[in-house]
Length: 511
View (cartoon, rainbow, N blue to C red):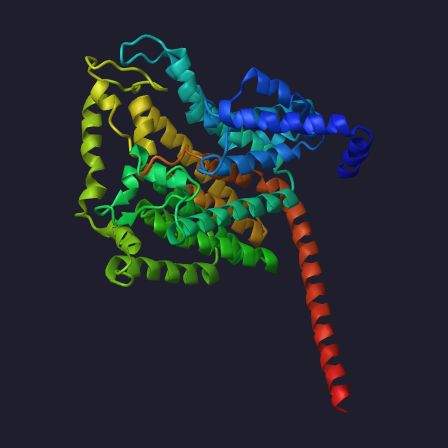
């Protein structure tokens, strides 16, 4: 590609230079003015070239989706103004689904037929029926409903389809976990940078603005850091769930280079929970490891994990170790039942409960302009503070019941696969890690509004979808792992021979 461009530039230097200048001008227009007609015209050549490359290397769209999903809320991410951030994920997901339809003969649609698809169909059908919900007496608002249903249900279905069909073999699965781990390590690095080096001007402005008021606590002496995520709670829960997944991947992996990488990511993410000051993250971490004790099917693994887990909880709940650190004191308050801030949400939820008795189907999806004289105005404007509470507010007791049942079934189905179906210990470790991370996320959704946020929704619902395709790739995984272990053993053998040869040479020199 590079040599072709050089040849073209040599023969058509002026035209190549003009194309580059137009592209630079288009980027400038995108950043400063958004999608203006002039910017679109300037970008047409690069858009055409991009379309050709995408059609030729379709898997690149999948990797673009994974990376963009993780970085899209980062304050340093430059995106055209005036476009909802969910648009980028959605357009890439639709493109990937179109590719699947184009390649229909080569697509393994049989992998879609599982319990997770059934539960998501039920949830999507319920949310579709919510278009008829007029509990607030404002008339049907299809535009508002569509805005809400995309984020609450359709994105889950997109995620399931894409992960099921695109992670089709062990090599792509390993690459995906590598990419996820690399992105998580970048998030760990960025929170370290925020804490010990400082915030960027944009981050500082956000922190001291109206959106950041919950991140400066204890009279402004304690900052809750959020790294590249949307807020500290989202980051804290995301790191807890990621830590659980990668630690489990690490202790069950047979390939040495993978084991080292997984454990570095896992323990890095575990550390990153603390600068967030998100107390829910502690319980998410605990819930994930409790789930793994059950799924491990091995006393050799369960006993040391239980000891480490119990020691971790004991230190936080019953000792003053690290009490001089504000972040640790903040996390330790999660075990204090009398802590005022941790119980403040229950007051709002009690008010919601009284109002929502009259709205069993909820107040409707999307953002509505509920007038001040409407009886639901007060409860509509209360902060949800929790994903479960938000779903309860929007879909009522009926909706939250459907969501919980569907979620429970899809998690239990995945755990069943890990516990009873998979034979390979390392593949079972990947499945267990993803199941435990999802359990951790659901507990996070009980305490904070994190389930449908970037990057958690795609990452962890996609992870659960991966569990359902593991039985289809298990034989390939066993062969792939055997091949990698043979290479690992060969490298080890050559290294030992080189060391012995070096010793012999040194001995001969002395003689």
